[in-house]
Image (tube, rainbow, N blue to C red):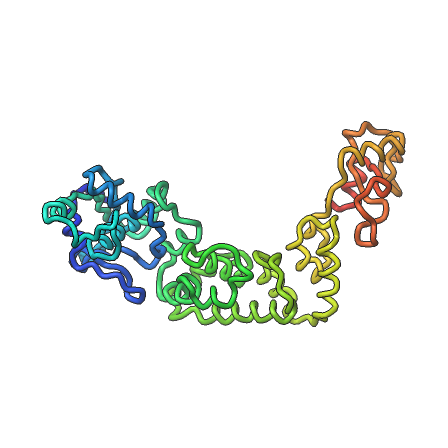
Length: 365
């Protein structure tokens, strides 16, 4: 990998600057791709953006930038997109600093900004070397998330189309599924969730298999089907539905029929059950009967002590492996006498103490 440090003026970087939602962001006389396909949209807040301009105006040094040289003598920003866009947007008159736009400045002030030297590492090498370096320098500033790094590795026609659906502000995925998904489209959370669902958590394999396909229609159609399924099975929306792994449930249960009205009655009851500490898990539970999804409230130390004293330290397991032996309280664990799913509550009178071996054998731990 060849790396060379150069000084590049803001005048040079901002020359020919274009920021177009469809075509991308370019500068440096059209030779610099400021926002490659694997990069995120501009995410700096006003305070961060203004701090960049203040740094330039005071002639303080900005953090070093990294550009990758392409085979056709063009370049792309590997690190420093947010800083580069900030200075170019200011010079282009897109925002003001302290109520002063660039064109309102005195000529000497304009020239000082345009002549400001940005320190840029020019990196040249094969794809693997560039990607390895990309991961290495991704340690400061607006750090890339896991999915953004995957985008860097698997950039191509499929990713370009997928990002139109999942990775833009107010993108189609956001418009139909923002009530159900955590995170932000521009942070690639929506794209990551969709691929995770359709691939059964094999994101990199899926992206590698589809990298050079002409479009992401399969993923987009699948995602729409998942959201439609959610709305049919659970027509009454609650905020607890946000972040549930509905795609995983859809993959397993899409061909099974459910009575939405019956599910709603059960959900209403479970939402009021104080023993259910993870309300979002109710949606998985009513479909799969996986009680662990509910995170049933645990017995308190006081309740455990009451049960232990009542039992005189004897393990109360049925068909006990230990032969119902005596144990110290630290060697035991609490269990419901009447199971929760049969109506048993997490209260002192419904608590029994089992030795760890019997409790874990019983629960399949």
